[in-house]
Image (cartoon, rainbow, N blue to C red; front, side, top):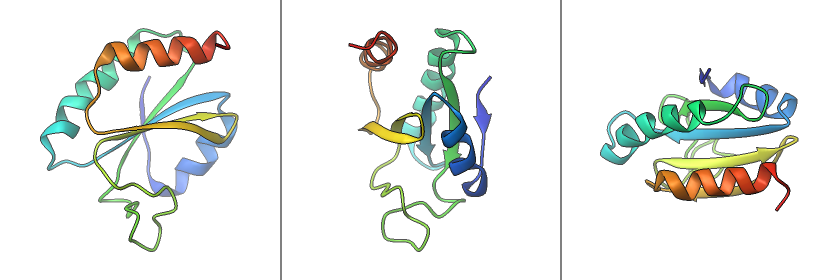
Length: 112
C-alpha cells in the first residue's frame, strides 16, 4: 500500500525501509498527476515486502531545493528518489516510462 506521508514522517520511513521508492509530486503539474497513476501501477508489480512506496507533496512540505527544508534538493516535479537502507541511491526527474522504472527496480532487487 502506498503511504502518503509528510515531511516529518519521511526520514523515519526511509530509515526503516530496506528499499524505498519515494515520489515527490505537486498537485498543479500535469506530469505529476500522470505519475500518480503510474506510481499506483508500480506498487502493484511488487510484493509488500520487496519495496516500500511513499509519496509526498513537495509544495505542502516545502521540499524544493531553494527552501529552508529543501534537503532533498527537489528541482523538478515529479521526482522519484530510490533509497536503499536509508541512503539515496538514484533519482529520476520528470515523467518516466513505466518500463524504465520497473527495469531499474528489478535490477536493484536482484543486485545487478
